Image (cartoon, rainbow, N blue to C red; front, side, top):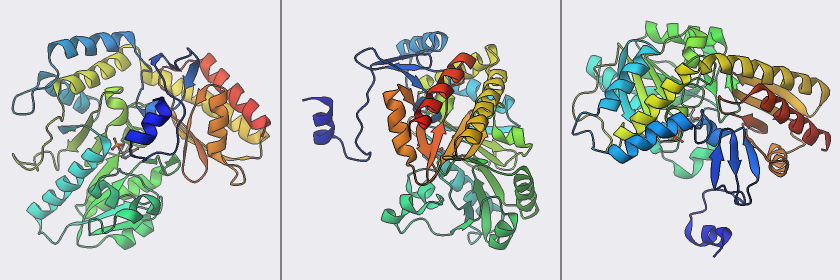
Length: 395
Ligand SMILES: *Cc1c(COP(=O)(O)O)cnc(C)c1O
């Protein structure tokens, strides 16, 4: 059987038809079985921040695989302790909980906020405010706070007590807050919804509103954080400290891991038995996370992200001036959307770019999404932009 037949016969059809597949990767390139190199500007949806098979990262992670992969959380895991300390050092004082994915840490954060509120007030104070157009994941709790109907509809009824305010509209949040509100969850830069950065004033006002009402402010930085803004986290770029910061995607550079970084207010809320995962923070994933951070520090990758993202933005703004089919360019660091005129399908442009051996994605209603690996060089950016321009010219 060929790949397509195997796919038809044995895989649940949770994705539209796919034709590309890869045998290996090196740096920012993925290779197919005919040795064609594809420039990977989506990095496994914001995951492979150091590109593919980074030699130092592979060295540390391979060594760990051969020594110890998993023990469960019945025992202390030294890599977990070190990674927790490192995450606190690069963010703010607090404590860390480890899971394996984005959606899992959303679940953990919602439970954390409810327990804090129930302990301090009463069980009726359990409501959560999220935002229209947001994306937080696919499990029931995370889906319940996801503000896009197309993901939710088939699975209702979802978790009760959740309402949606308008993003970047503080009055809408103020109107939604009640004495039953225990948490607000927000992506500082909406990802799936179209790479829409929060306005700075909005996040500051949101923080103030939450503090005044003792509401737990949760930042979902699963996509927009971990170096992608050019700072470790977007909250640092905005100058707003949330009560709970969520990080996953890029953290393990491809090994599944997610972490809840709980600030002082909620750092001791969970007690033994409240929350756990079999795999969460195992020796392999925490070693991968630690190696990723060490390499980013060693090579001053955040500075590189700042430089290279400014260059991409400059080029895309110039393209937007020349091509009417570009409606808008939105970005925060290396998280970039190019909104396309609704008359032309963004997915078709993505397919045309496959033929040019460039990998990007889509987001929002009709936008191209670029989440390049942090190691992309300036000449590679120039090449990417020139192919994009050529493709736009031919439309
Ligand atoms: C990807 C993503 C999630 C879900 O993460 P998974 O690892 O796919 O479960 C949640 N929130 C945001 C902002 C994301 O981009």
